[in-house]
Length: 232
Ligand code: SF4
Image (cartoon, rainbow, N blue to C red; front, side):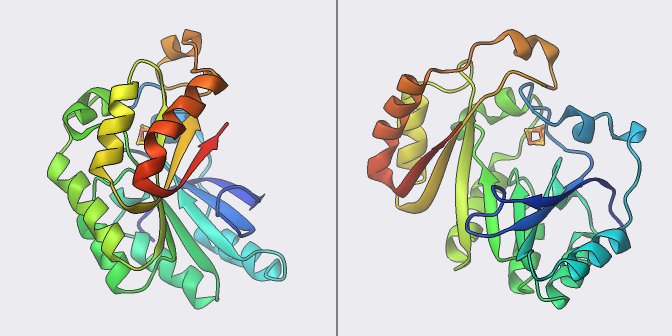
């Protein structure tokens, strides 16, 4: 199967809203967000052992009484052409599939949606479109980001958009711009930045926003979404 699995969390109560899931980490990413909390999976994965898909299928099959679904995260899972086949094998066993993505591959999303291979999509919104290249620290095709958003909104699937709020990259003005941009979407999550493990180590010295500031962001964004959540 054409994908690199470098992490497997057997059970999670927080990675698939409303469900108990296992979490699969696919290695590698086409972005380089300096505050990324998964540097081992994004750039250091050669040192990690490969995990075979069969091991995951066996585990979820054995624990099917307790596990509702599988969250596929990364890195960026959509960089792998083998993703649809992997998802299909999970779906065939009767599990829900959630995908975490940075939204850079709308062609893959379109394929997954058309073939009913995913049940829930969680897409990162890094910043207002014009700042994407700064936050992702690489060239970003912003029309692909917009296309992914449009596909997700039209998909009829459960979904959420989410932003890790790093003070350097996210201001009150950005909150308003993102709110207006994604206006009338269902769910938006503001994720607290945790300066513990980061791709760029200098980000471990950066101070996150206070709870009060996060609540201010929520207040700004509330009129634009059905539901706004703060994740700390
Ligand atoms: S935060 Fe997400 S998109 Fe950014 S480098 Fe890490 S895995 Fe990739």
